[in-house]
Length: 391
Image (cartoon, rainbow, N blue to C red; front, side):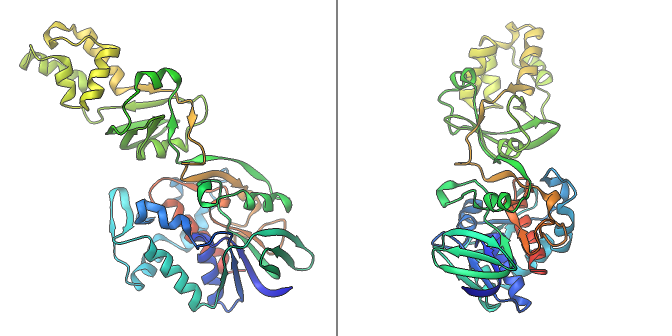
């Protein structure tokens, strides 16, 4: 049995942040991960450029059954703190839409930075390690494929269920249940949505078509791009709202945000009376979609032959296209896992379990899920930092 001060299960964003912070305090830290490389999920994030934080971090961008829980950690380790760390390592970055920050070069720069910080802090990282059993007497005893270890503080940073192809598992959830912590039922978040059978037939062959839209669901809205897929809808607008969507809910999609279509069609009726409705719609929407709209909702003919009542009806449909998805594509394509360890059972200051002294949960394994755009990585940095100050 090898004795260390701290064992961290998971060498992802939260685990590495916690490890380096604990190491800086002189703690003897061992970080264990089943993968053959550390931080695999970071490497694919942001299309390989890592959307590592957002300039607009605030609690309103996070979903949790305990809505105030994330505020303390986000305030004590902010997006500006992580930006300063990135700058100290000479990593160049840029802002995209809505405050999203990406590496100019590669996500590998962020992983390299974290591993260097861990190395400088004396952290030991062991990969290819399978956890076989955990128990607690006076200390935590971890039996693994790489040997048996004992520690005073055990940090669970095992992530959620999204991206099983990268090795995601329910290990963190199982550990929480073993020690009597409550769980909020997990489900896929930031995930593409699947059409109903009727909509799948209506919009077959549209995969790859993209446009700027406004999507509303359960009093939340997102103005971003929408992407038709082979199975349904994706793109930033859909991914964002999917976390707020539940089975049976309806999405309302404005296909022409910022335009009063009825007013526009009225003007065209005067200025271009012999122009067909399909041609006019094709000037604002992809041609394939304009054709399908005519097939479904309005006969294609010169606009001066269409009564205003029909134009009004068409405008209402396109500004309020209602879609009732069959479901999500699941964890295979979901970017995050909603739900997880109930944060009512954790200290918001330290991330320590209120039920088991020395047991901590950080990152995606907890019931804190951010919006699309760097919010989930910031939660990993903030929660990992906070736990690192106390383990």
